[in-house]
Length: 331
Image (cartoon, rainbow, N blue to C red; front, side, top):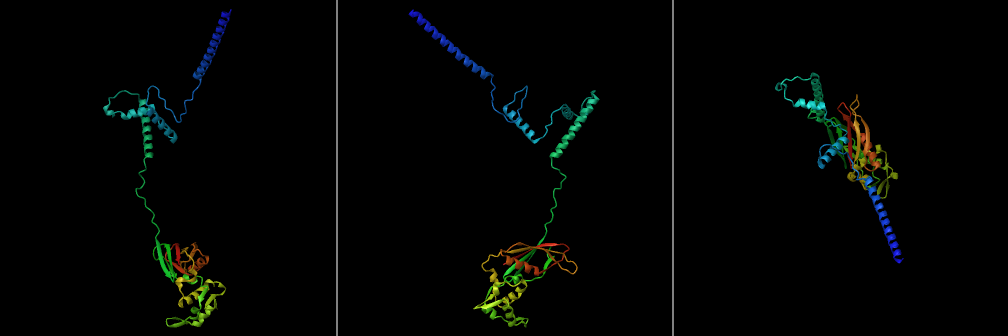
């Protein structure tokens, strides 16, 4: 009885092992079938693929062909395909002259069709070639327009200088009436008493043009004595039209015009004025128009003085056209 129990236990163990082995084999077989039947993604390829049937080509040739078709596709050009008409046209071109070929009966209609096709193909090729090549009808040398001539006129004033540049030939524009611009600059706020007290008569060509008392009276209209100096009344600048008398007296009696008070402690930049000189009209000379300040000295009172003084001058224009010019004033 003991032996029977042992045999039953062994048979049950073997049956369980066989059943377990069968289950594992079923699971493994299921995964193998699933792997075989599943779809695998081998990667993505960008760009066109070239497939040829009947012959095997190298990888490099395939890449070149794919790149060539990609360039043609991006550029939007249509690649002509080889047709039977083109083949016939090429064959017609490669054939020897008719004199060297024996006469054979041919189909007249097909011959005309081939000739027409070859003619059309030849015309299309010549059109494309002419479009690809640069036109030879253009002149080899183009005539450049002549640049306008620029004439410069330079001058100096007491302590300052100027330049006039205009678009025109020499002698077409000139400053017919030159008025010194420095006469319209801001007058000094403070003067030494010795300068006004020592004013002398103004003598021109041996003739007294104005006495010392008359000139001193003009100065006292704008200045008042304070100790050892004369100060500008209320430190208010006189009108532009009154400044030339003051500057003329100061210059004639030894005032340092090169180091005038309006320059002290300032970094004065050149002033530029753009203007146009009209051609003469009747008894009128070259009138100035379009006067505009284009570069500032950095101080509005100086700019206004230069602009006012510039307008006091007169210009002449000997041409029959308007001439643009630029006036530059340095301190």
